[in-house]
Amino acid sequence: MLVGKVMSSPVISATNATTVRAAAQQMRTHHVGALPVFHDNRSVGIVTDRDLVTRVIAAPGFVRGLETGVHEIMSHDVITCFEDQHVTEAAALMGERQVRRLVVLDRAGAPVGILSVGDIAEHVSEELAGEVLGEISEARARDMDG
Image (tube, rainbow, N blue to C red; front, top):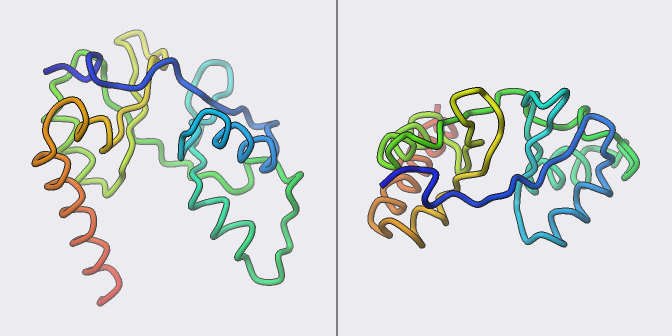
């Protein structure tokens, strides 16, 4: 099955100018846990609900306010796949890169969706989704031990 058949679309996203507060409100409104950040229709980062907690709310001294731009807290390493790739390839990439979501692009490089482990579980295979989560958890446990 191809990624384009199971991804979530349209892309709910942010820009560099989006504030932490606005990003959190978008996540709540659209029931998503991550927002890709775009500049000139090019993916420049991704901000997750975890980023909001660890880099804003739980940051020492809560230095960053809710009006901070997401560009200050986002992850710059955006992992992508293509809508015409097979889901098993995308799942392998998730496990390898230890991420739960991929930004999905068309072959021209334009964002067309998000593929999450939940999308894989719901539309493809709970077993495959479980394998991805197992790889992510296993790798994170190794990182914490070493």
